[in-house]
Image (cartoon, rainbow, N blue to C red; front, side, top):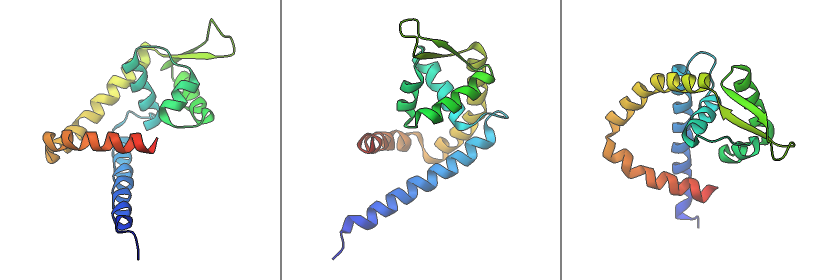
Length: 144
């Protein structure tokens, strides 16, 4: 006899993975030329926290390897979107902060994303979106 939750779990993860792929495809089309989703995510995070972070902290926040985050940060630094400096208290560490150009790039990206997000929320209904957010947050928390 099979677990009745098995089919439910498969359906849930199938929907999540498909939605993730579709959102990523749509986002990639509306982000400014040359900006990747990972770049936008880091810029958006740094803009929200308004404090410098270490590459290790950013890697942990985004659940990626330090090498992957180093690659993303190198590209952002090359574009002038972040400043990377030594940690004055511990020279082995680096600190990452968003630059004015990074804030502008993030704002430009938000302008491109907003119509798409607004359209989706309008189609689904804001109340339904608000209702599903706690469930998605709990799911994410349990997966972490």
